[in-house]
Image (cartoon, rainbow, N blue to C red; front, side, top):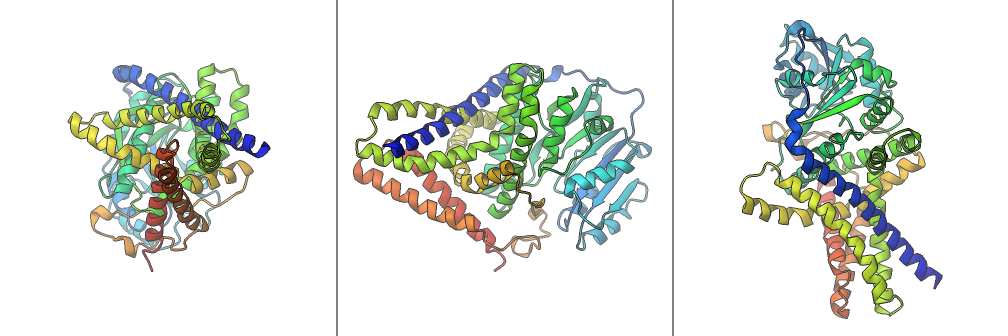
Length: 489
């Protein structure tokens, strides 16, 4: 009987966590809906004398995209004497020669090539070393897979209307959104973050985050906040919280677009997801106590906790999915009153709220209601299912982040497939070793397929939609992972 109570407790706590997280998402959605009509009211001050800007381009082994990046940055419209571009190159392959050859094609532009012989601190270390040599009052940062807007500086700098403003973040858009189902689903998720979450937080002066690229900092803000730290895998989130905890203000501008490439295969998606998820947990362990102890409004603290601990939802999904098997069996044997199951089922409202967030973000700026509705109804269950299918992989990252286990910064392989210069099979940066977790994802797919079968056999459908989504999600993640890890075989 104790085991039964424990099982119900785990299931209920997991659903409760998802429900509380959904309340935070729902509040962000309400703030987004209120704020979207006043987005243009943020004050802008065009400087009488434009400041000097340093553009930092952190690069590590980027054969397929670095030339495109250099060409795009060279086209940025800004006075040559007020712009310096740092190539922060940690590469260990031919990328270094490619960079040096490419920048020689632009003798009129102030390119600074900074090559480190080691990767101490990874991206954070490269940015920190570049900052020591940067002469700009403002620091713009772009990852290798981005194509900056030529008017990026002219669009963002006027938003530094006050000395208190430390950073302006722009919205990521997607160069290869329609390449595959995987890229479409990533765009589906990222659009919700860059529209609902960022606007929802920024409009109520809650903490937002620099997204690691596609943003511009006041140099004095970076230094005042303690410069770049390399003790987490998400140095961008870490610095964002340190700066805002010191009173710096951030601005998010969704109308300024920064196009970038989405990982086109599951192994690359997993690499990126692991770093983001583990880094988020590391930042939660680093900042949560400090944020709660500071004199901040309740809403700011609430959303900061939801933001810092959002990766924990994968642990909650994993616990709920495992315990749901026992709950189903206990219900079949009559050990759990039907009323209790219905009460815990109320927490499913959380999934409805989360679904509303993604649906509304999908409709934002879309044309053609019925076509968009059909696409959204198709994309939403796929997205939720595959997000559940990534729960095992991402839960491992969260556990490592909270436990303090350190791991190297594994950059996401870039492809530049739309240019025709590379193909998947010839990419030199793919990892072809299949992780153990991938095999467990296949096992979990079979387990939940079995639960779907049992639901129909026993005519007990209370958890059927949940188990169908888990079966589909784990199967899709397993199959697509297996295919992507086997590309080079």
